[in-house]
Image (tube, rainbow, N blue to C red; front, side):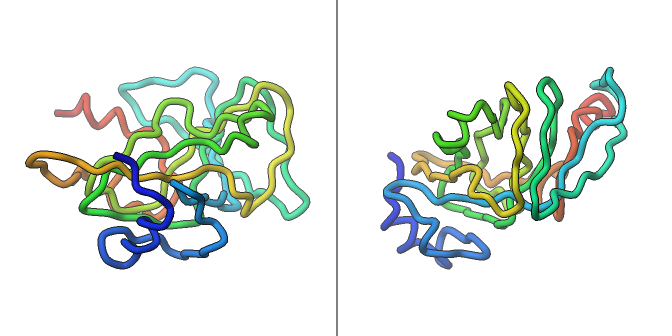
Length: 173
């Protein structure tokens, strides 16, 4: 089952933590998250799964930044979230998707126990100007049944900023 917006609010600071929290971002069954003012872009045209891929930082100015099609941008949410009781999921807002802007190309599924900022995989169909602090995506929460272990991966847990792929660490095992 998906939690209602009212239940998300009731669970705040108990089983759900969103910081900062603003009631105006609460929806009937989700909560809007905002875009931080930094992006990362990969420096190389060819990426390698087995090795770290260098990135460069791009700042989104107040007057906006024009994104290029067919280029992957990594961003993050302003809000830090955590929950040890629910499965967090991330979706783009429909108003954003209708502009051809995708905010999580493949990774909208969170793990129970995740604690951190959400890294966004941003891709656009055509050039589009984006702005810092725009409500770009929404988080919603599923209940979980049965016994479970909390997410404890060292790769992405307790992150402080935008995280490029750390898949290469899987090859080092």
